[in-house]
Length: 436
Ligand code: ATP
Image (cartoon, rainbow, N blue to C red; front, top):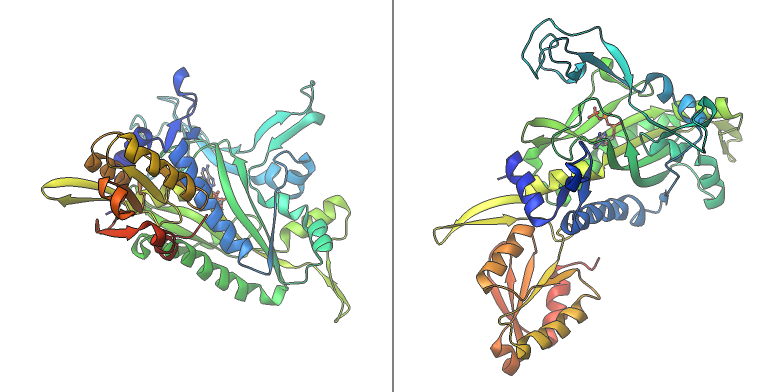
């Protein structure tokens, strides 16, 4: 059973997954800080994306481009002109809303008044700053609203230096910024967030086939990492919803507590971006096919996912409660590749005769696995804490361990316990966990 909204937000704060940014100063709206556990899950989500999109593939390479780019990039891409959301303001309560996200386009969801909206204004979402000491128009730069353009402007550098032939992809993970009109739903919509994007360049006539391929592949990525297929769906955009560059877009959507909402967009961007940058920069960004002796602009399929938003969805989906011996047990059934810790090492008592060998064991296992050692409180409470943060295996070092050189390994999901001899522990864990 996935968590309701308040449960997951409370657990995130209580256990150190996510904190409000600048909390000691009353909080900065729509910005969040990831604590030790949230940072671990976020990093694992990004690592899993990188493994499946770059490391395990021979046809995709990765880059890390600058957040600050020439203003011309955003003029060429069309963002300066059309990266806008329709905004209305309520004359009664002054609340601002994004018109396309309202259930009733005539009624203010904040104060409930009807017929009080101002004319719709197109609000540009790019955050602005200035480079250098003078705040002039010439020094204006934007904080990138997507990582994709950093890929397009490096297309030729990457293709040439890596000697890439079509079809191939360029991937990137990084921060993006949007001055959202109505941020909210915790980390779902924030003004600073992280994206995981890949531009897959192919021959124009193969683009439909690659679009289908990436739609399938991306959907599988979520289910392979344990997301319930019933909570996922693919929604194809209607023609009037399409972005200015797109010949087809579908979203991977998740059943959030407030309803279906986007995790990732997969778009057929055609040759729009490369053509625009070629025209605005004067560089020839066409691909040269030696065999056919022809030059053309490749078409592009883009799977664009949100790392922070996806992390939130994985947490919601993993949340579970069950009754064990008349008590409620909260358990995060996170896939072991995503859980903050893969292991917890728990000496049964605080006595040095147990803590010392348990510490040695933990220090050895840390070289391969992410783990936490926890010495405080009764063992039952420590198990419950590890269940609640999703640790797949707890290793308990007890008084018998001193004699039999074995430990008890407890499985988070089944709560079954195995007695495993220390010289077989590495093999036992290797069968169940992958190193990070
Ligand atoms: P929306 O319609 O929800 O504003 P979008 O369609 O503009 O989103 P894209 O431009 O397709 O979003 O961005 C790709 C992905 O980046 C989204 O699917 C989402 O996961 C993530 N993303 C976009 N905006 C935000 C945001 N403000 N906060 C967190 N993640 C975001």
